[in-house]
Image (cartoon, rainbow, N blue to C red; front, side, top):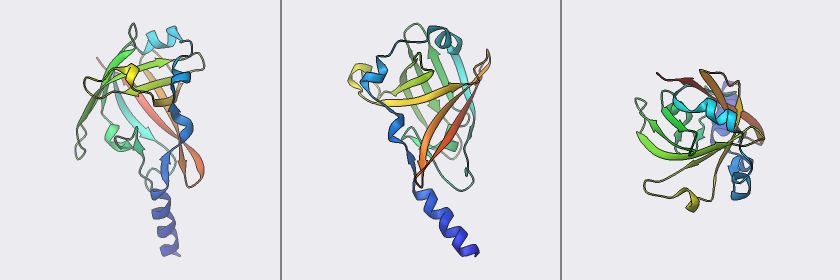
Length: 164
């Protein structure tokens, strides 16, 4: 019985992947913006937690960059007047990564994120990520992504805290 459970857990870990519904295209990126939500996110933030069902058994490759746990402790900067910023991953035991980003929050409450290569213009990046903004306060907010795990949709929650 233990072998069957272990095999199922290992199989599920191979099938945890990004849902195609979360890929943002240029039509979604042109939606009107929610300026008040964007202004509230302006500033420097630390991603303090990543949670999802089965996180002890399933690895999630967040934003096609690294294991989701490598994002804990990452720093994010959001500039609301030009929708630019940057992100930096420096978790111990993980590969360091930093990148400029372009972001916005549309009127449907979706956080639109483009991760850029150094020197790349956002207009040349035709895809990105759509996440739901939740529980937004002055000092914290969540971004929720939907992934496919073994044919089922699961929520990955990224918890942000304002940095000083």
